[in-house]
Image 1 (cartoon, rainbow, N blue to C red):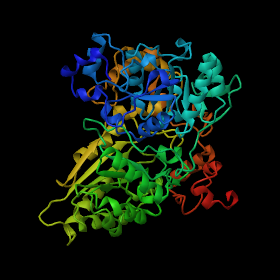
Image 2: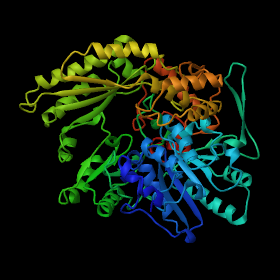
Image 3: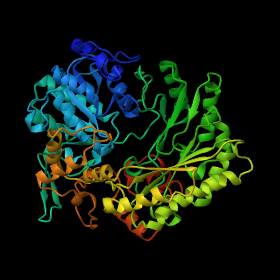
Image 4: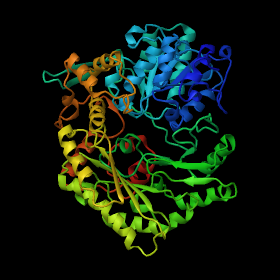
Length: 618
């Protein structure tokens, strides 16, 4: 129930449904009946946060414990924030309407580096001190998890602890410890020392960092009994892991307005630019029976009529055809559609199309990532041009006439000829359509090329590689803008400035915390939104703090450099990543995990595809 003072504001803001709560399946408990209250904060708008599968999983996992209560908090849009500040209304949770300051634990999900200023803004809007050292008590413990937690150092002074890896069990375990410490009157310092002993918990205040004279990291030293390296937490048995049987159903349109059924975690492919493909190893699948039961239950509890089979690469599910046939036994009679959002060029087939013919033929999306075969070998995409052309031929024969292709520019060793090859490949797709005798009659083809700037990320083989400068990226974007070979091709690309800032914080260290705080106090937040992003303001903040953003974004790093994240262990050997980087420069590919084990290190978790491919683990 939203605060009474908010009621007067709702008619004067966009999309008031963002701020009222009360959705079907939301969880409301008695405050007196719970021991620990957890605020799950998504540092972006309601529409984006309500589409996030991780929030739905953790919301349900925490709330199934009778004495825990998890509530949702989203970043208010600019108009609502302004009015809240004018009326001195603190940021509040949707379920109870209580201010964020009333919660024991305040948890943020770190999905995207450009959301960091929103985190500070949400804390400030709640009247909560930004820095951990200014929050001396156990109340309002600020925690975070998510993919960007793999390098949390730019946020280290603001957070009390970070969750590394899968959170379903880890979050509950930490909350149980918090419950005991709260009951016993334990100090915050002692709680953090105890929490640091839980696998997957990183407490930044227990680690001292030293820097070399050139500004690079010299070392991290664990103190007060904290482990020297913190290993991520993994859920190995997805069939018995928690998965929600319901979730709050939004009352306004959100980005992904459907059921997401997770079918697997991890990825077998090893694309060298892809952070998620390494962070979520090893490759683990759910059984058909579990997926089928969970999907049906969610449809019944939410009323949705579309199930999205979610993963990093759903078409790599090894019993995909059998899975779809099983789901069709009830989805077809109930008129529920099935979508596969992550299809690969090399396993798209007429047989697959037959099984998902209920999907509306509005368009298909694939990600060749690079236009030339040389570049696809560099990034280990393991997809050929012939496979792409065969795939679009199949799609055209099945009635599709709209194809979207994702690419990147600024990849290691890329030339201007490689950029031109993106346009050439788009032209070949157009030509294929008009040469195909079974194409849809009376329809023109539409080929969209979406091009992002490459951002080097931690725990990837390209973590050593410097990002292209804005000038070089501009030259490449000029080719994409001015040399489009067909009116049937539409090219879009992302701004170089936002990608640059993303690279700064992706590979940044603790010193960037002062830049974040400085730019926040200048009024900066919602940096992921074009209408709010102010690059000049960011550069002013770097200058005031005496830090050079190029040091983090465009500087290529030697193999022996200590990274700000080297004391965090995601199961992937740094030596393996270096080997993959060297193979990229030699334009050599690596087989996927189902074809051959590459000894990346993920076998340390003793599960998933690693056990199947490593006889010494069985």
